[in-house]
Image 1 (tube, rainbow, N blue to C red):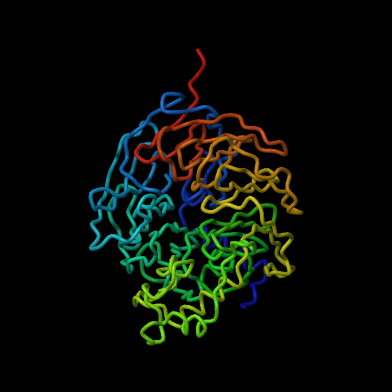
Image 2 (cartoon, rainbow, N blue to C red; image 1 turned 180 degrees about the vertical axis):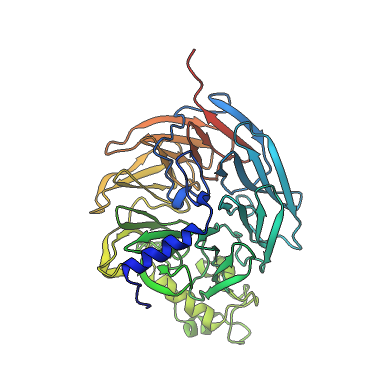
Length: 487
């Protein structure tokens, strides 16, 4: 573990680095939303944001446009919205006028092969773009990372191998210093790569062989005089030096497959993750020793398992997940790696605080909580409370210092899965169901639903609260909702 720089030196270097970057990296109070979940990746609207509470296809609509399909969320810088999509075999990046919804430009990339995605819910355009005010960076699991200038000129392209998961890629790029950071946790060959913003050259790359498939997005956390690149993954939440990728600290307690992103607040780091088989109940998945299972099921005695050799059950269901090298067989190392993961994981939320050196470890964990956990939608820290939404439409609010529930698994009245992440603005929390119902809940210690807004379409992208406007991408549209002045 690398020693930290003295606080004064670290602050000086951080400030020097920032002076060389556009001022558009973070929200400027006018409602910019430059990356996945907005400034800092925290899901928080600006302090002066006042998005509407009640809205729908014909209510408080400033404008509404058709957009090609995609699961990425809209980002905003100044007068422009940026979005990715997929249509007719083409990967698209769009720039849209924030005031009118008019499409300003559209750029297409035709992949040689489209990555595998979930047959009903997935989309090859699932990673949210990021912008520094001069360029827009996008990631497609079928192509790699591309950079465009604000007017749509392609500046560089960093090709990458096809993502190896049956659900496709969805970790969004983030910015740290002069680099674009892209997390690629997959069934085999997991890694984290930093690309120079101006050229696309590889600044550093960290292999992550112990990470077996993941979809969360890192965040950059400035604390204790330095910056940490906080990266979720299988079992471990890690803090890396964003300049080099070297590991500074790690905390255990994440799910086998982590779809959520961490958040920070009041000097603490929070996360929550859940995946099937990770609860320590009767449904907890365990794997027998390789040799024992081999003796019972290796029909051709070649020392490995084909798909047909596995009996019905959890191992057969996860064949692709375990076959990391895509050989068509599960070999000893793959089996034992996955067995170790199943033995270690336990679904939970937790809060952790840095020690005197600004480093984190299991010793600094303040609490762990194992109910009401989210599967895909990232949690939220807002106004001194920690919020999570569980599939089925249940909201939990925890005291961030103790982990004790303020309220637990309160029903939102919007059933079904919740894949969009929580966002907040103006004392309200916006909770979006996959069926397209956005429930607006009052922030605070008493559970109170202020409105349920049915958008009439599937919604998997996370909303963006911008000033007096709320953007909510649906299966076929991008509407801008704004309170209509009373007459």
